[in-house]
Structures are given as structure tokens and as C-alpha cells.
Amino acid sequence: MATLISYRSRLLFVAVMIVLSLFWTNALRAENGGLPDYVIEEFGTPPEVPMGPLSEQLQAAVKVAFIDSMAQSTWGRDQAIALAEIGESKDPRLVWVISDMMRFASSRGLSNQLAETASELLGKDMQTRNPWGIVTDHLIAWGIPAPPDYLELKRNVFTSVIPGWEKIFVEGDIDWRLVSWGGVLIDDRAYDTTDDVCNCIPAADNPEVSSAEDATWLKDDDIVFGIEVNGEFRAYPRRIMEVREMVNDTLGGRDLGIPYCTLCGAAQAYFTDQLAPGIERPILRTSGLLIRSNKVMYDLRTFSVFDTFLGKAVTGPLAKKNVQLKQATVITTDWGTWKKEHPETTVLLERYALGRDPDFRNGRDANGPIFPVGDVDPRLSVHEDIIGVVTASGKPIAFQRSAAVVALQSGSKIEFENVHLELDAGGIKAVDADGSDLGSHQAFWFAWSQFYPGTELWSG
Image 1: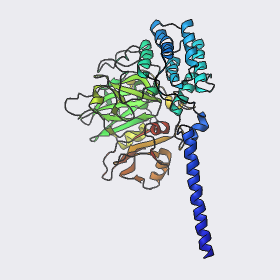
Image 2: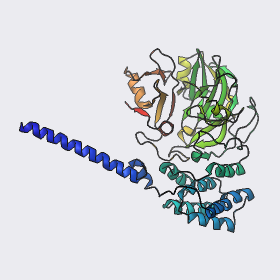
Image 3: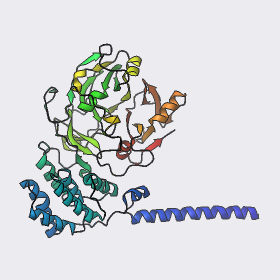
Image 4: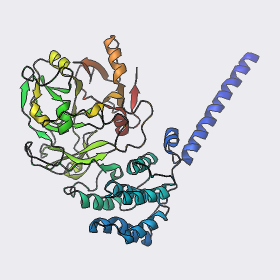
């Protein structure tokens, strides 16, 4: 009896400790704005944020600093005084506009003034070698809300600098706080004008292809993105996709839009046909904008913006029609294995690389994302390759690619709900129990976990 009482006492003690731990964890998170511990550890405690509209005096200062300066393409004494008033406001919401201005700052002096004001409002020194990136990372990680009329302010800044975005910056199901400039102009060339020169990342429409036998310019260890539709196979060399970043193609009798985001290591394939009656095939283009280091694509016909990672229209006429594009699987592998497993494959012609041979995947991003992403789910490293897919129940699941390859090669089964992983030509794809395609693709962990927060994770 004494042993039983002692055992019950220990259970009660453990239960009490768990409850107290949860209480203090929740209390701490409430004190820190509901942020998880890893965010506080990396970025510190967020500042207090006021609610409600801006005062008339502050609105006037915002106009002088952010609207008049862009309209007049100048920054003078009046703007400096207005920026000082903004810094004294103790309203960190306005740092979002400061961040937008910093992205286009034309001089080190202006950048320093903006960084100093951001530091004052956020209560943390942001004057570093890359103040724009540091400031924006903190804003995202802390979830600082936008100021009143933010879209109008942001639209004014961006469209004053880069022509062609007037139809892009509109209301919709998109968090405009997270949108930044990727450093290139919008690709607004007419459909099927892939030979036209542009100061943009030029999409390829209806690209010509060759047989595998004729593609002597490709080395066996070159990375390709392989796609199969209705028994027809095609390889999209990474060398080409790093230059084009967008292809509008037809394969196996189906129309496809194929974006590649070099920043998040993700090539995706969306079906752009068989949509609701009255909806023309979207022609996908690169906008020159980013959301948390993921490219923002749009439809050339309607200027509807799509969430590139999710395939969902978020602004414009297509958003009003609730257009959601379905995905085909993209296999990331090497050319030698792909052509051996699928000798009937076709492949894009070398000329679409425009004479360039970049290797962003193994160079530019070696030290982490080069654009702001805010906080990253710490369960995997930022640039860990995963295979991502959404289950029949709507649950996103990521599989650590390196561990999955080892498991599958050893004969182990990898299953989650209706998802079954298979090796395919040196890559991995997700299929249903009957072998049907589930539209999986490879990506960096930071990107998948941002666009599917709370994703399930299989890591072996």
C-alpha cells in the first residue's frame, strides 16, 4: 500500500510540474507577444506596439518623409526633420515603411538616417553593414503589425522607383509587409517573346526541345528538374532555370507554368489549363518582388498575383475567382540518371541559358538566405533539402531528403497518411496508395516551413 501511495504521489508531482511548466511557458510567451522561445533568443524581446490611427502631426510627418520625398526624388532638411518626429513617436509600426525606403536608399547617408530611426523605434541597434536586412528580419520575426494605410504608403514607394508595378500593388489575400524588392524589374513582355531583350528575369514560353541523344551540351552530373505528364517526360536543366526562373510549357497534352525560385531551392510545376469556365490560361511571369525570399509570380493576362509556393491567386481577377493551381511532381536529380531512367525524355535547348552558366545553389547562398526571411523553424537547418507534399487531409508534410534517400535505398517504406515516397531517377516523388502523382517537389526547409507553418516533419 505504501508503495502504491508513493507511486501516486510521484505521478501527482510530475503532473503538477507539467502544469506549472506549461503555465510559465504560456505566461512568458504572452509577455513576449506570443512568440516562441527561439525567436526571443535570436532576436530579443519585441518593443511595445501602440494601437489605433496615427495622430495628425504624425501623419503629416509620414507624408513629408515617405510620400513627398518619393514624389520629388529628393531628401532634404524637411524630410530629416519629419524622420526625427517619426523616431520620437515610439510607434514601431512605421518601421515597415522605413524598411521599404531603406531598400531603395540612394546613398549611405540616407541609409544611416533610416537605420538610426529604425533603431530608435525598435529599441535595438540596427546600424550594421546590412541594416535593411537586419531591420526587416526583426520586423518579420516579431510580427510587428503594419501602420494604418500601409499598402498605400508602400505602393507609393515602390511604384515611384520601378515602373510596371501599378497593377501589382492592390488589395488582396497577401501580406504586403513581407513583400520586398528582389533587385530586378518586372517581366511584362508579351506572351511568347522569349527572344526579346529585357532588364528582367526573362521567362521562356513554349521552349524548343531536343532528344536526350542530341543534348550533348549537358554533362551527366548537371542538375535537372524532371517532369512527367501523361507518360511524356521532359528535363529542365537547372542551368537554364537559374537564368529564366519561369517557363510556360505544354507537356503530355497539358499546359504548365513552371517557376523556379533560386533563393529557396524550389522548382514547381503547376497545371495552367482545365480551370473553371471562362478563365484563360494564366501566363506566369516574374514580378521582380519577393516574399520572405520566395519569388512573387503573377499572371500576365490579368496581373493577378499568385502565391508562388502555394499556387493560389491572391490578388486580382483570378483571386476573386478563387483560382488554385494544381501541382505536378518535380524530380530534382542529375542529367545522367534522368536520361538513363527515362531515355525517351526531351530537354530544353542550350540557347535558353542565354550563354550563362550560373551556380547559385552552391555559391551565393552558402552563408544563409541573402534576403530577409525573419525567423526560421529550428527543427532543421535553414538550407536543408526537403521533399514537400500536402496529404489528402490537407496536412503539409516535409521529408528530410538525405534521410529519405538512405531509407528508401535500404528498402524501408516511408508513408504518412496517404503519402508514399518512391525513388525516381535519382530523386524522390510522393504518390498515393494507387501510385498516382501527389505533386511533390524539393525545397529548402526555411521556405517550406514559412509557407506551411506547423508542417509535419519526417526526418528518419
